[in-house]
Length: 333
Image (cartoon, rainbow, N blue to C red; front, top):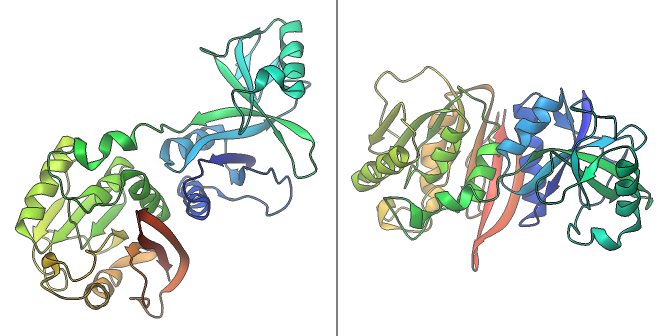
């Protein structure tokens, strides 16, 4: 295991931390030490190798990059074993990427690299290095291993999809929820409240097999259009009451539930309140989640819809739209 870090982007620090830890677990890692090597502005992880550090960055939504510590005395010849010999490098300070020209530590690293034959290229570097102070105020050097694609979720927002509804979880938060479910490629993921398909699509983009249910035929047809637009083919999407409906050729077990149930006494619930609806539906599907699997749901608060042997391991309240707040919950057994 190696110690790595990710830089949260600031939208929701608590949710970002839980997303990063769950993403690390999905690629075989764990959370990092609570205090050892603490770097303000970064969250530490333990990961198997550099490839897994890059994969975490590919998964994350509420972050900017993943980095690993670098020994300043060896960076010019062998930065973490990935680049050998002089290269084009950008050196910046985390949190203040445009202030490098007046930052003594950044300038010192740059001068050392130039003296060893490297060139500084802030626009098109082959390698990015970052300076950040630890908890004692001592500057440390990090190599960027993976950059988070901050534009990709924006391209999946509702105005860009063929089937649209005014209430839908923003893709960045949907990806965070999918990471909370600790989804791995090939996992069988079910959403009993499919809606526009936006949340389940994030699981599909992480490589999952998709299974969805919605009581509204219009939503089922619309979700299928959105899946096709995103290049996804679900295993099965059916219309009906999720407490009763069944999939053809359903698997014996699912790896995760990922869902954003309808809000309030919406028409799609037939006038049934959200808490009552979720309490009626969710236990049925949770019984079919394998040991070690997760249930990740976005709820307006209220009591836990799952009882023993399930236990809540994550509960983070986030403002998702203006004054609308939802709680991102994860259950394990």
